[in-house]
Image (cartoon, rainbow, N blue to C red; front, side):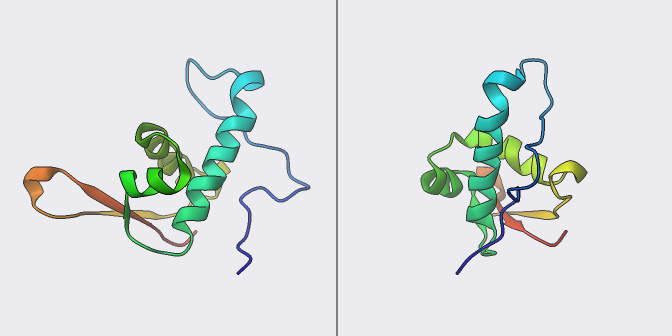
Length: 100
C-alpha cells in the first residue's frame, strides 16, 4: 500500500520551533523524523510512545514533540487522539492519528 507523504516532492521542508532549533542542522532531520512518526500512525492503530519508538528507532521524547507538530497547521493540522492505556496510576497514554 502506498501511503501519502507529508512532504510532496514539490514542497519545501517546513521549519520547526524552539530556542535550540538550528535550520542547517535540524531541518532535514526533524522533517524526516516527522515523516517516520506519521508513517507509523497513518494506519490508524492505537500506539504508545514506546511502540512508535520501537518502529521508528527515534527517542520517545522526540516522538512526543513530533505528535505535537502534527497538530500544528503548517504540518497538516491533524487530529491526534490520545487515551489512557491500562490503570490510571501507570500514566501510560496511547495515540492515534485522526483526520485533518
